Length: 277
Ligand code: SF4
Image (tube, rainbow, N blue to C red; front, side):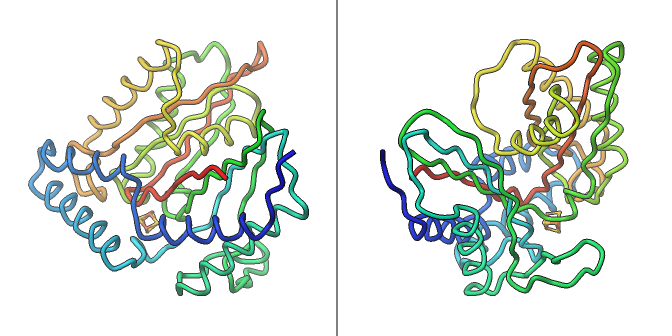
């Protein structure tokens, strides 16, 4: 049994948050550069180049990419041979507290959705944990802004709606969002499971992990990518051929009479990373 102490987890979360708040994911930056070359609209091209300049400046100065430094979402994969002597949630929240306080990131979390009183330290994070085999702890962190999260949707489709129903729901969601989620966006899609499982898959899909997937899912991702980019919403919603950079689908077995579909939208400020302790 390997012991991982709470301080190690807190320090790891702290460093990860410092990094991701000022550094857009490598995949996103590469995709933005590619999109800047391909974008058909003059204004769209200008906007993408401004986004890239902003991202590079943020990295250089260790400043936040965006004023909305978001709510912290954390996916943990805890090996069965790891012993954690204490409360792992507290260790993660301590990392969030220190990172947001020391670096003067905007505190965006309210203690209650009704009273709306700010927690003053951006805690608590939203934490999910699953068990894996091994002696490591994987920490996947994301900083999620409200502009994109608020445009995300879930729908319980009927199995008869099929693939066409899934595509229509995703396209309707993006059409309704327009420029609100600060395009170019990434689209995480969760299909299957039940109501909450689909939502969780759609969020985890935004980590853009390179997992192998069935041919029909790869085809569906490509079709949705093409159709979304043909909508003409464009960078920041001001028109153009680049509305989305990535479409990533995760699936899970479901009930014979269900077809849950969740769409989680990520803005151009895609801030996420993972570490293995
Ligand atoms: S949607 Fe993203 S880029 Fe737009 S304001 Fe929110 S965090 Fe910033």
